[in-house]
Image (cartoon, rainbow, N blue to C red; front, top):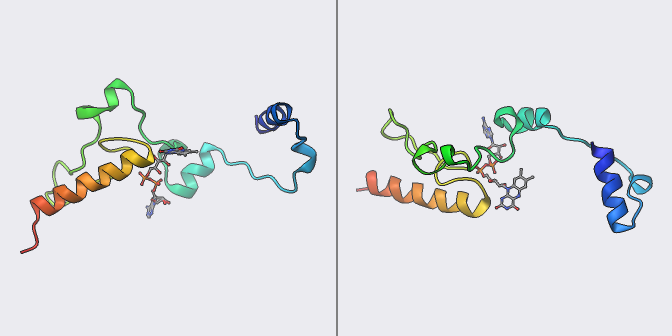
Length: 102
Ligand SMILES: Cc1cc2nc3c(=O)[nH]c(=O)nc-3n(C[C@H](O)[C@H](O)[C@H](O)COP(=O)(O)OP(=O)(O)OC[C@H]3O[C@@H](n4cnc5c(N)ncnc54)[C@H](O)[C@@H]3O)c2cc1C
């Protein structure tokens, strides 16, 4: 598959990538899982399908522990850098609201 991608890219750009490659490292979902603790090597976390968005997505607050919160791609609101950053801000606001420093 990697060779096909390289060939396709070479065709589209008109540049022979294969013969100008000095080194090549291939990462599959197996490496991603090992390197980054990503469930089944999924670089994008939970999908944004209907049954995994909004109220169906894992909440930012643990349902049993009162002082454990979650942020990131597989939690609410979802995947992608802007959304993850917005999510981290929402979690921060929730924490400071629910556990104000006196
Ligand atoms: C190929 C690819 C392209 C993408 N392109 C875009 C794009 O163009 N625009 C966009 O908005 N988003 C893009 N994304 C999505 C975006 O990168 C993710 O949604 C975002 O980085 C998720 O942020 P996160 O903080 O949840 O997780 P991550 O950024 O994955 O951070 C989690 C961190 O926790 C570390 N970690 C894991 N387990 C442990 C442990 N047990 N102890 C300590 N540390 C641990 C990991 O090493 C990692 O550094 C892309 C993703 C991929 C894979």
